[in-house]
Image 1: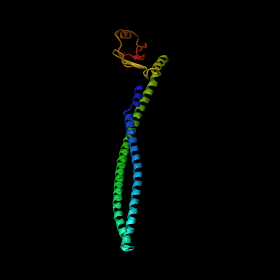
Image 2: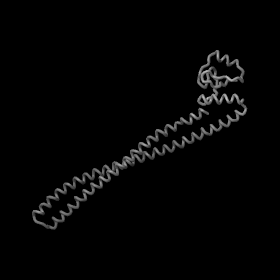
Image 3: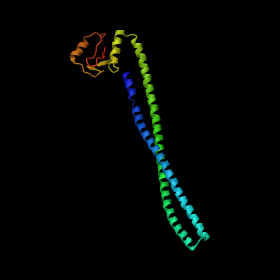
Amino acid sequence: MSTLKNKAANLPELAEIASTTIKSNNVRDLRIAAETELSDVKRELARAEGDVEQIVTRIERDEKRLASGTGTPKELEQTQHELGTLGARRSELEEVELEIMMRVDGIKDRIATLSQEENELGMVLADLNIRKENALAAIHTELEGIETDRKATTQSVNAEFLALYEKIRAGSNGIGAAALAGNQCKGCNLTLNTIELQRIAGLAQDEVVRCEECRCILVRDK
């Protein structure tokens, strides 16, 4: 049972879920930061568009004044000069506007890429969680079967022996008994010396034998 519980606590899916969750959270944070950046740049673009519109309005006004011929020759000359200045300023502002628009497009592309990656990681996490739940369900079913068998077995076991087993199990990481395979205790992997093995061999089969190292009950081959 302790082996199964340890298996449940150390499922490979758990480590994968943890690492994938970190990746997903990092991508989410990058997406949110990009969306915030996009909002700021869009406001910057709106200001740039407003600046261009103001220049265009002034250019249209001056062009109408020149077309009508209203004003003195000096005033018309000043208006013509102003148009040249406004035209140059318009070109500068439109370049700024275009640069900001390109930044907006770049950020949108970045958000789209991050959103896709976030969705893909979300699907990976969903699959990992399903695999984890299936693995835990299988372990739980196996544990229930072992517990059922254990209860059936304990009904025929001496109460004093059972109490000893439970006491050892409680203080030995869940291991109350272990097989004696050859000259090795499978509870702690200690190799028993020849004298100890001879002593054990001379004991009755119903006599309790415990490992000198881990103190668990040794289950001997009949």
